[in-house]
Image 1 (cartoon, rainbow, N blue to C red):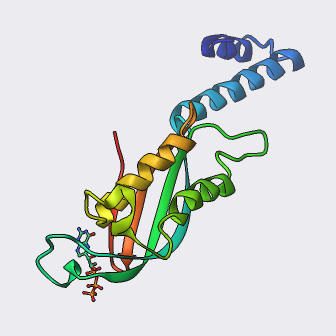
Image 2 (image 1 turned 180 degrees about the vertical axis):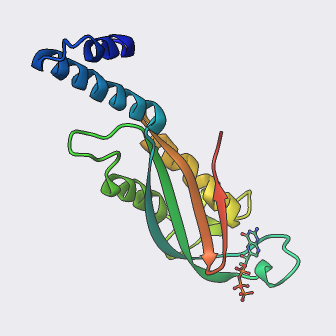
Length: 165
Ligand SMILES: Nc1nc2c(c(=O)[nH]1)N=C([C@H](O)[C@H](O)COP(=O)(O)OP(=O)(O)OP(=O)(O)O)CN2
């Protein structure tokens, strides 16, 4: 029933119970449609944090970071989801943590410079974040889930965020 029809029902005196019920329902439907239009498409960002301890050194760095030293690294992973499953989960924190642990385990209590991904490039926060992003995207991405970004920090106050378009 269009807006004008509703007005006609109300104006014509045909406002019997059936006509009024129909008009009210149509009005409610139009509110729901307006709300859907205003709220837009749903996006969820599921975030998980992990830590690991590892040593590294930066080849060619003009300062003391060229010497081997250690950090307690923090990794923040953000995963975008567009759909929720039947119990309201976009992607289970546990699935993100399990995937991230698998990658991060190979770094924990190691000298990053000795590991394959960082033999030819420095284990900077940038390169660690990029490596983790790509590894995680490879296992977690699907038609409704996408790794949005990975943040790596070597200590409080400094971090690098990596993402791909
Ligand atoms: N953009 C980047 N800058 C620096 C990186 C890096 O990976 N990306 N890395 C380093 C060194 O690894 C350094 O050990 C870490 O720097 P910083 O957080 O400053 O660590 P410090 O322990 O030296 O911190 P202080 O607060 O100054 O003691 C350097 N830059």
